[in-house]
Image (tube, rainbow, N blue to C red; front, top):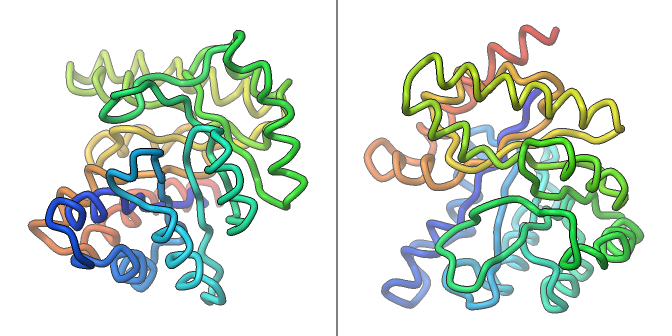
Length: 251
């Protein structure tokens, strides 16, 4: 089954635009779970422009004891504050992503090089805390092999290139998708689980849900944007419905 992990960052962005407590990210997470979402994602950035460390802890408490279990995924760059927070909260998964100062959102996956030399130690530290580690990478061989060598449990394939190809038409979408198929197969052959995220939506997910070995999709911006018009519970169910045929095909 492909798990949907709803990223609730944008709810915190709206709250922070005014200050105060509304809308509540905890209520948003609870609404997603009530609608059937099996996972919640947060990305606390150093500048606290949306999700804060306090939000991370409050959501963790809200998800604790949910039946069935709801997976909690914390994204972020491996700065000391983030690593300490992950060790304290102990989510199911930590997705480590590169951060460029001043960026609006993630722009690329990790690239093997001097900036990633300490990643094996970071991965080892988090895994020792019982946290599954996913590394955010481009859908190409070198970063995937690097993620395996760093000791990661999974990779999250950066899907913006696929989303842009989808916008250019069916042929471009299929060509791009095939490159992700090759990436997923390589990751699986190296013992890595496969997640995916960035600019996936109800339309382009119809193709992408057929990616072999796909464990999880993390979706935030498109989902929350549509929720403004149709409601959060409804849009979560829409995404679950899109993913359902892939689950049935896998048996």
